[in-house]
Image (cartoon, rainbow, N blue to C red; front, side, top):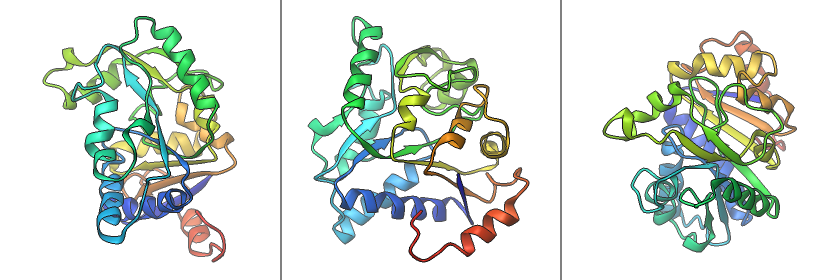
Length: 257
């Protein structure tokens, strides 16, 4: 893994946008996430589209997950969220934005169908956030490191974390369809962004803790091209920050993130 520490959330968003822009210019398949972590990155990409002409017209998008039981038009469905926060503001064709079918009569089959569709495409870069308990996508602690897209029951902590997007915690769905940890690792490049002290312990476990299903994000240790992009607060519990900064400062000019 490559650990990249930036001063603050704004600098993290700019660096993340720099990385994603390279893939967008190649017309790559983009794996995108929702939640609070990537919002500033999306805002920077939208700015570049509007002010600098960055185009996404040749890109496709695959979402990480979807709530079970929410219609795609529901304001808190991830199909709607990614359009509201990003896709509707750039030139991606709506038909090329894919997400799991959260309102399928058979969610188990919907998970299998999405896994097949995902496997038929090569995701160039997968943008990830991280939960306070180390989840990525909706792969909660104890998830199999070799898991595929499937139906999952949300951890109570995740429901609590996501309640801020709903009127009450009781309105948060208890089940989701999510890409598995093995599904996520098929992407060519994994880019995990995190900011704030609240994510510091999860980042410590991801980067310097053991490889374990108890911290699902630790599976990034297995990937040949994983970038952990964090601000100073999110890096505050790491032990080897001096080395990470040294490696970043001495990165060869011809080596991309």
